[in-house]
Amino acid sequence: MQGFSYKKQLQSAQQEMMAISNHFQKLEEIMKSLIDHAPNKRVIAPERPMSKSEVASILCMSSRSFSNLIKEFESDLSSMGVKKTAKKLPPEAVRFLCEKVENYEDLD
Image 1 (cartoon, rainbow, N blue to C red):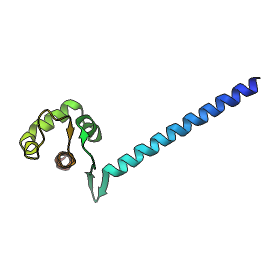
Image 2: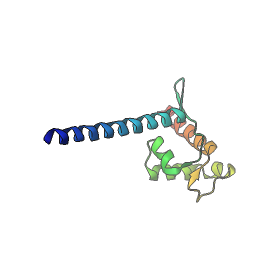
Image 3: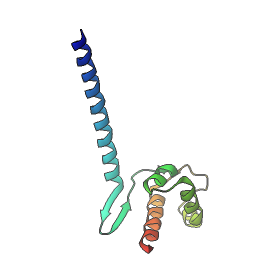
Image 4: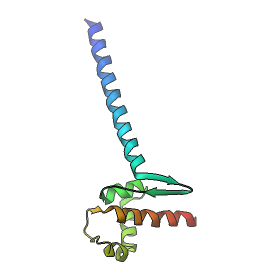
């Protein structure tokens, strides 16, 4: 009877490992679709609107720092049609902000 229990636990562990592996494959696909490596540059190229928290996470910024970044470029973003209260940013706004952050990193 114990052998059956171990076999069932092993099957369960294998199923969990497969689920985790699939999850990582999906994450890798998402990252590949977002990041296009150019020489010495990292260009984010989203195909869909992204939440502010998603963009902050991709840029390795805290939500407060990202909020400050948005305030700094508020006029540029509003000319793109992004409202202050927008929950999601259109792809062109994400690319714009990512380029600005990349330029800041180049100054270091």
